[in-house]
Length: 236
Image (cartoon, rainbow, N blue to C red; front, side, top):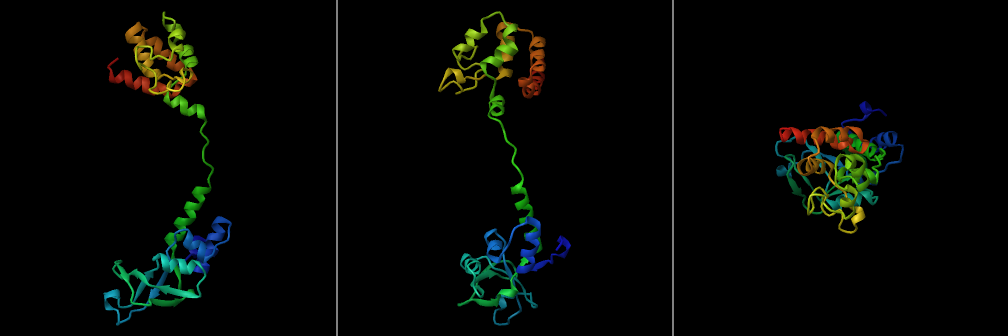
C-alpha cells in the first residue's frame, strides 16, 4: 500500500498494513494507540443529543482520547466504548452513562496522523552524530599545550610558567574559562580570543601576528570567525 492508497480515514487494518510497509515491523491496534494515534468513530446524527452534533446534521467523526477508553481498546476489548469525546465543534463532551458503544471495525485513524508517526519513527531510527569529547572542550577553550603552540613564540614572558599555575594570564580569571581549573589546575582551559586580545593589550603582541596564529592552527579554526568579528566590533 502506497501513501496514495492510504485513505483520509484509514481502518485499523489499513493503518497497520501501511505502517508495516514503512517501518518493517508489525503493528496492532494497541501499538497504534501506544504511539499516540487518536482513534475515531463516525457518529451518525442523533436527535437525542442535539448539543453534541450542533449543525452537523449528517454526523461527524468523534475522537476517542479519554485514557480509560483508549486503554480499554489497547487491552483488547471486543468493542468500542466511548465515555468522553469532543462534539462537532471540538469541545470536550462527557457522554451520558454508560457511553456510546461501537464495533471495532468502525475505528478509523487520520491519514495525516499515520504519516506523521511514520516520519517520526524514521527520524528516530537515523544514526545520531557522535561528538568527540575533545570537540566539546575545544568549543569552550584550548588547553595549555595548545596555548603554547599557538602563542608561545609571540610573547617575551615565560608563558609556560604562567599557564602552569592555571592562572588567567592577566590576573584573576583573565582569559581562563571560569571554573575550568576548579578541580585541578591541569584541567584549566583558556578562551583563545580573550587570550589574544590580552596579549595584544598587555604584552603588545601585534594583532597581525595573533591573526596569523588563528589561521595557522587547526584547533583554532572554529575560533577564527569569532576573532575576526571581535576585531571588527572593536574597530581594529
